[in-house]
Image 1 (spheres, helix red, strand yellow):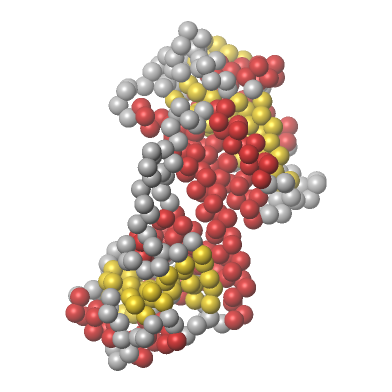
Image 2 (cartoon, helix red, strand yellow):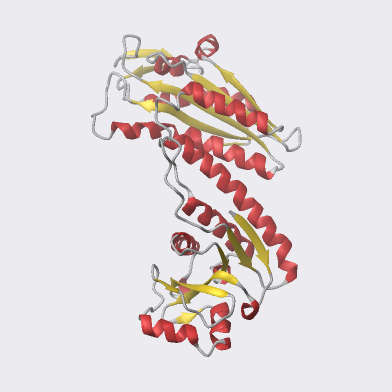
Length: 373
């Protein structure tokens, strides 16, 4: 979707849809009040007629408007004006995104960024608005033989600021939000893929693809044989139960001072977790494809870092494996030696996460990180 930042008075605006906020007791936000005053109290009359008080979750779509060039007006309930916090603001924007998707509007002008969120400024409000709107548009359709049509016709959204001096910073906030949203979408896509597609090898391929796209991002992939040579006995113990080779995926994003210690992100990448010999109940086992969402978040974060060209050094480590029962799988009571040299007795093979992560964390030490997440 295209986003624009403009300084524009409500009286001169033209759009398929204007979006105003309404606080409780039918109190319009400042932009809504200006529009209302310019059109003989039209919005106030419609609020009374529809019995919309302004509580969170309420919405009112007006298809007949008194303003030339305005086809629709969407009023969104914002709750109490004196208790608007960051969480409620995000919910308001997410609700707005859903309402716009079904409104039929091809373009819209959003005035909700003027909402007074405690301890937050305009640029934060714009960044969060774009992130939430992009999130509300997300659909995972890749695995469908015929993807559903996008019901939303919305293709352009204009964000209003008060003065020209605010435009540049607001545009930067939009760019930041779009980069973060792109990283989030990548993480969601990886998490939503089924286990027969998103294997450890697939994650390795996706990592290499990211590195080709971003020059400051480098990737090294260590396969199971290399992990064994390194002495990552805990990781290999989990991975060996599957015909899919385990992979340690190491990202390096270097865009800060050379001597600056990196921030390290370590993600669990169990692309499917049956529990191993200590097998899980069959109910909802399909959801165990989500056991790699820690890894997905590392992918998404590094994509956002590269998109934003952040002046940081970041290392990402993904421990990717399947936890499967087989003749080669670890058994309850097995004892393995970790990369740190410590021995571990495995009483339950469904504790695979701590096994792969302990070796990944030890491997992370070689980068001497300033912080580990």
